[in-house]
Image (tube, rainbow, N blue to C red; front, top):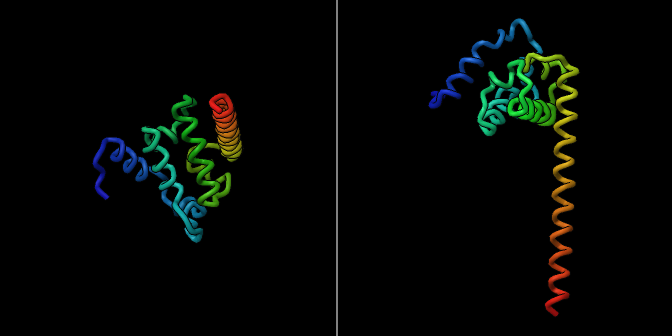
Length: 134
């Protein structure tokens, strides 16, 4: 894969800076089906227009922390990785990974509840308009 943008070049360089798997053999566990942690992190980073290096940095800015939390939750769900593995990938403690997954799930549940409420409200308005037109 030849990187075409500066973000892709930064991400590729960042991937090369990850410690060798011989130092952390549990990071190399690829017996699980599905995408790797790096692939999931890169997908989320590209969609949110940040880099994987940003996600692995100590910054707490919302524009970085929310995508990081999403990536951690996706890795947990799709990759089946443990919290210590996820935390190590993002240079964080396992408890931070646990909190991140929990917060992301809470945000998603709240967004789904809001969408359901909006749909109910729109249906109610449509019913009222039909009754008034009849």
